[in-house]
Image 1: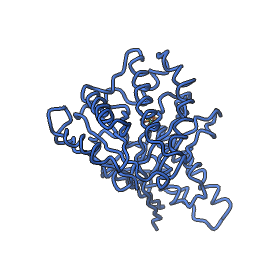
Image 2: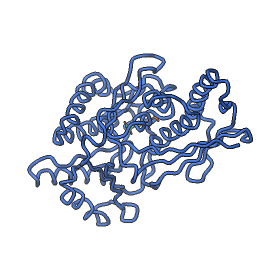
Image 3: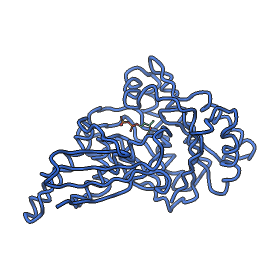
Image 4: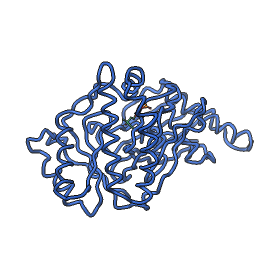
Length: 345
Ligand code: DP6
């Protein structure tokens, strides 16, 4: 007897960045953050969770390859979900004892790992929701976000579609460090994201390690978490609610630059953006100057790839200009540099 459940979880790209933890075990952040969820048609993880008495141990495969699940993060997710299942089984004694069975998790990403996208967010969100579905847990997305956050911080935001926030919270046990919906995708459906893949450069410093070095050494970081981000979170929620693209774009680019400035202020400094990344920044500025208004925004995570946000009405101008650059001598790799377009659902 095999029990089975499947789910999808989308990739999210932060416009107010999570960078820094106050608790590295529970992934409790030093500041709140906000992201835009990309369309599931384009960028997502599909995960099937199954369990059976015949499964002697827990296993996880990603794109057909066995993954090490002994790490504390995956174990924390399994443990929390089994605990919730046990309370379901305690209440309903006729319920099958799924919590005692081995779990088999099979995940597929529909985007190339080479794209350098933070797949851990969609990955942990899909892992947690597929098991919650398998266990028929009554949990809300908020509760599942609390569990996914322990897998990878940014994963908590992928439990929500559209525009998702993550409260930093103040409790030591992380109970109030959860994601929430700022607005559904349907609220502002003409938002578009274009992902530009810079030359396939291996990530030097992982986000997990990099943010801890920043917390430990950057003075600029203090200002960021205490003053800059709280103000920007409020302004960003307002910009999304009012569908004010110019404000959204200003906040997005400035927060990306603030995050990368904190990286440069880390000792030793961390550089995620390269010359190609900076060329995309200049191109974005040139497009806005030419248009006479702010019609595109850029943001960079812990790597050189750019995510460009714009509205559908400006597709030809923004995406057209960037796509014309791909494969030319600008440094965007012609092969892997194929633009992945991610329109919202
Ligand atoms: C720059 O969520 O990957 O993408 O919690 O250690 O797994 P861990 O870190 P992770 O960090 C993401 C950092 C970021 C910004 C963001 O997504 O908010």
